[in-house]
Image 1 (cartoon, rainbow, N blue to C red):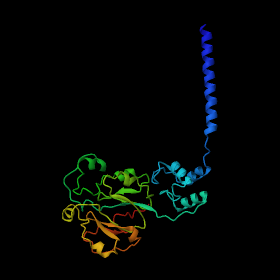
Image 2: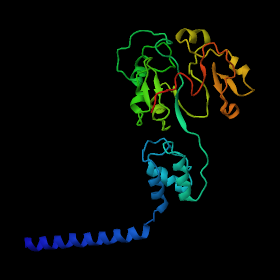
Image 3: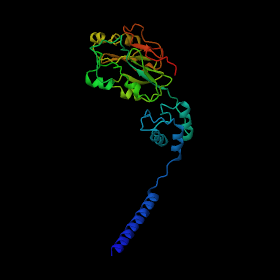
Length: 277
């Protein structure tokens, strides 16, 4: 009796298994969506860094959206112009010219320039220092100098300088944006390399107090605004801001009288590394 019950159970389970398998096979055929072969071709053309700099979770997802026409063919910041050209050829479209994106440190508040409020003995991390008491610098907007951006860069394109400010090695920078994402003070920005003039300050304090916490601070004197063409440079929240839509790719300062030299020309600015890749 027990053997008969066992055989019946085995037969029933086997029958159900076969039925479910058949159902899955039918469903697979009925709902199968053939993948566009161009997705695999685009994926092969990509560097495979999976850095997320394109705005998508990985190269595979980026490739899918490129083929769908959602993402631009030159949307991979790691890939070169040749990569964009190859993808464009796969899709039968033209590759628009694009500028290389580079990480820029928008702060010059190093050890000599920044006033300190004490000795920081906490976790050696920008995020930890920002959350706890703001580290050891009086400026609440400047670089904290603990190198979270260095650790976040998958391409070894950032090193810490002797003044405890990160230095970007432009030849290695792919513009993935990981460094900017982890910076708790938002002092790392991603800029096209044709943005030659930059205001290297994020301090929003009033001029007199701002000048007491850093010698390289923008004090909103307005000299750069008056020296530029209308609309090219503006003062917003006590900080000079360049409107690149109007300023364009000029490489000449609107004024050479910036009292704290916080508006500089790239790539000759001190904060851009001249280290060989």
